[in-house]
Image 1 (cartoon, one colour):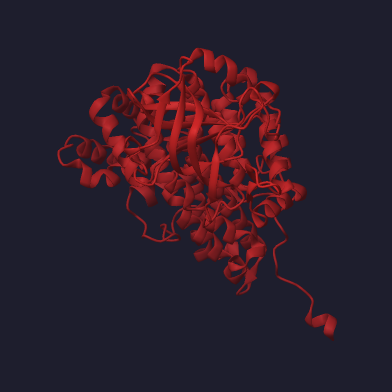
Image 2 (cartoon, one colour):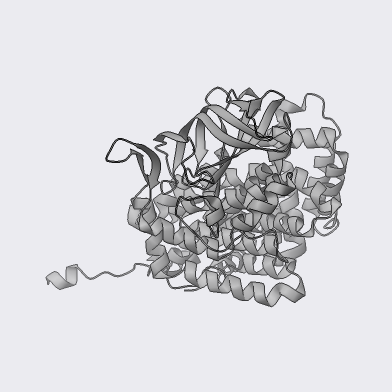
Length: 544
């Protein structure tokens, strides 16, 4: 009798040993669409291999271990000497090493590199989002360093290497290197011009001694950091190496690690500079202009990371409901649950499609595409990252009480979900950045309107949304108070245009009805019941 009471039935099997890439139809189609024919086959094979790795039991276990064993700060060695090091669980290093070897820092120098890397980053986020931080910053440092050709020649081969070397030693002795970033200060936050870290010129041209305190320094175990400080000529960008060329440690005093809501496998530190050696990047007083390329790249990664989290949340929800039975049938076949799952799937696919389109704009590199990025990146960062938290919470609810239990993995996704909306400039910062582009760069708005206009006439709800958007854009007086609403509309219209052109008709129809046509409620699961929601859900189902 005891054996009967402990029989387990009506539970979904673990979502494991599956191809994270191949089972994500929206992602596969985006990669096929944006990669040139001559690199498509190689790119798809590479991403499929990483997809199987990401879905393996071993790698999923590494993600769990890295999350459950957060980094520890060691300020001193046993003899009392300052060492300022961060210790990570071995699983963290395994994940980071896999990410580097998969090319997550190597986009800039190969054909289709940004699309291939974007798809890989979106997948790798689903394993454990914390190790995405150093991968993102290392990738994003390249455009900032390219403002100084000599620095770029020295550092870019290390940053784009596929070799992970965790040792703290002179950068010239390492086959690969990682970069971190330190811009935020207590008194400034996103207002980096309020930074008070001081940079005093040294005898050697282009070198400085920094004194100050950074409130957030991400990935403090990195080999070098891009930081902002006040030089005699104004706010300036600097490269701060962790170890100097003679093998001595630079002054990099780790005060504490932040105890964060999520992203716990990744270390975020407060760091003190006290005569810290630094090399100038770009000209004095041009710090924001120098580092803006890095900021844009990390903002796109925020959108990609949120798209990855949403995809994993939706995959888990659809997988669970495809197996779980209630009230005489599969949950996924129940009209109300099907509506919820389809609504979540729309949000996930729209995020993936938009993020991959922007990655393709980086690969193109033309003037029109660069102009599009100027508006579309902050708009995408604003909207996609804000949608992540409600998607994660609703997906957890699809699992019922099981989704509230740590073993399901859903609480980790919920805790991680607000992060990308906060980091690299929160919502108001993104909305204000969109306004600056609208006011100062008419070519950016022209590029945006050309892009969304490619779908004009294909769906009456999209056409109406474009018309309403043009009305909003015609009056920019007193616009700051409605900047969030305007930014949201820019993102939704762009997503709608992309889905109408590229997604299956049932997906585009449901998106336009629920997101642009106003024919849905405020909560997920309120789409019109007449839509083909079963096809939308089946498309989102991961096949293990």
